[in-house]
Image (cartoon, rainbow, N blue to C red):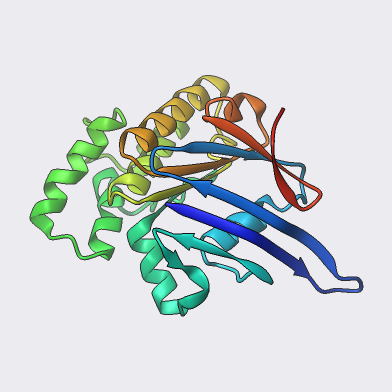
Length: 222
């Protein structure tokens, strides 16, 4: 699903700063890993490179056999829409759409017919425990419910790679635990590869394994 080889990235300034160097990672479908690291260690940079939002100085990122370096901006946009799902700390649920309309949006963007959307959206909402909330507006939901909407939206189009960036940073501990368990179970049951980026060891412990970004490289947590 995901192959990262010898990835490197630096930024020029008064002094050139290397953020990532020699990063390797292989993920198969159903694998769910957590990436931890201090602020400034390169977690956001790594996610941006994996998502094709930034270009590496060296090395490669391949998703489903597609080398991101060989794709232009339009092709990268299509790849993100079709093969990736994203869950963020800030939810990014559109306030003027119902819950069901928010979840249906990725399907519409990739051209799924309305009849098929009408089947897949309720099934996805049921999977995240929101079967009765499809007609609700986001303002009527709690933070934990909003994050479950975000998970449903990230998974409804059956992406091969799911990227979650501090998805419980705005939630209370009980809601966070519920969301983390749901995210893990849904990613794995759907055969996607998943990356959870977090500062929280409790959150990281929900993943199959924990990796740490330090000194520019990615290492197994011992």
